[in-house]
Image 1 (cartoon, helix red, strand yellow):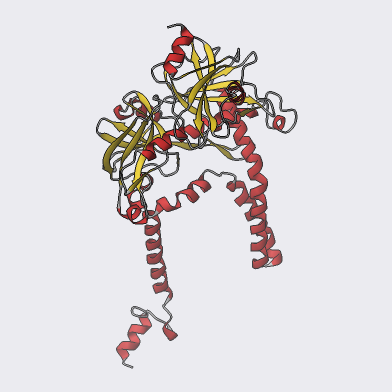
Image 2 (image 1 turned 120 degrees about the vertical axis):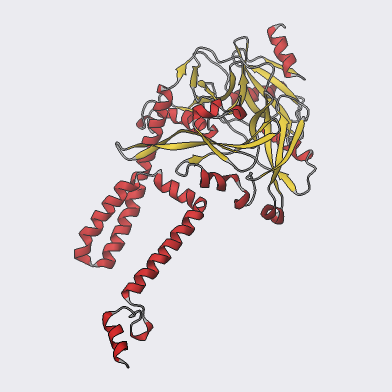
Length: 471
């Protein structure tokens, strides 16, 4: 070995490996840094895949006291039992604490949301009049059948339905999503199927045109992947729905964000954050609630998250406190169970004041009378509560009256579906659609007066309403 070799080794400038081929500490550090950068880059690029886990951790502040207390347990055990036993004890403490704190934190969150809903609502003595030009006739199950029966694109299928407003009229909307594994991997959403909600017979329109980022497609062609890459990340995106404005198609995605509370235990409650609007070319607009209401493409559309309405109204059962829901159940409510395959409250309806969600609630327990009806402005998120002073039929009892009145109907082959609150000349009715069990159409529509319990039926909702008002 030459003197120059000895010199190079002595100053360490080229000493990159130790005996046996083991990298030197300096080189190991460089490799670890490079590997860390690579991993972080991959995670960043694939961050939509981890959204559920990341958001779940972010929106669970109960983890803060869990981690702190588990760390204290770990430190206390470390010097007494050794590292292995201390780690096991800390892990057990974390699991026990998480489950012990999560349940009461969930109750506190429900109580907070329920009281916020009640405090922010307006108590009214009458519900808004129903829009006679836009009655809700077609139930979701029947609309699903109408959309499938008229589909003539062999490479596509109709996706999940939702409510949209097209040319001022409410429609059931469906994305035309790729059908089959090969098409799923290679094709984009091909358009939108619209089923008129106000017509008893099938009135179906198909709007064609590929969307760069759509619904029911592979991740690289999917709206959600693009929204999580370009929109807000630490929010909860709700179900998307299609918007057709002239020749343009959009995917609208309402979202909520967590509101943090730290007493008596850390918890969060959801609040409306805005709407992500995905254009046909894949461009994403992140709109605040006010911006969404002003957007021309969203004129007349529902904007407020559907699930937030349901969750907020359901949480008002805590109006007399958490303990009351386990003991006397004084003034406790529950969402009324309603018949209707694949659909549940809230229901989207058109009133004379615009588009709204309606939710009927019953007293807790076996009672089936009507306790309250909530109406939520689907564009602003403003809540109105109509408390029932007297005795009014609830939706379940209204469907029972329809069954009893139509004794000649074979109820093994027909079902009442989606009882909807309808208000005509300040009179409250339940509109009940009777449909075949295979949802192939609408047999007839019945109206049940919630106060007098009288039942009316006719082939046309508009005629029934006209008979009601004397017009």
